[in-house]
Length: 73
Image 1 (cartoon, rainbow, N blue to C red):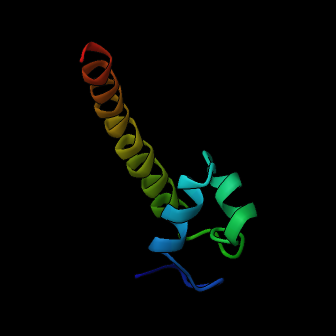
Image 2 (cartoon, one colour):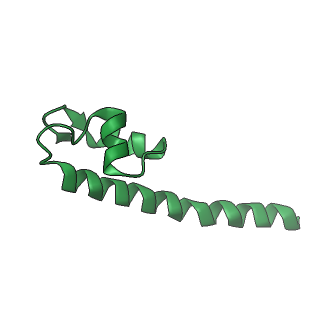
Image 3 (cartoon, one colour):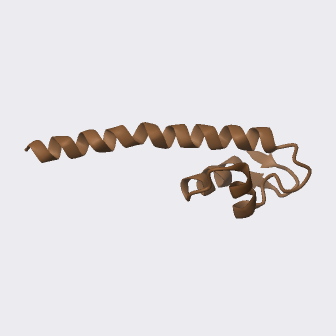
């Protein structure tokens, strides 16, 4: 789905740049251009950043659990 119509940036691309290290709307805008036109998509961009970062945080405990299980074997 296109999130930024001015720059034709999809939600997939925004999620990709967040996974690559973008943490703010400004970071996303610099990385892929989303939000750098009219700004109408900025609330959606901000929501996508929050969702992506939350998903990344949810993955971290699983990694720690796997490492702890390996360490005890």
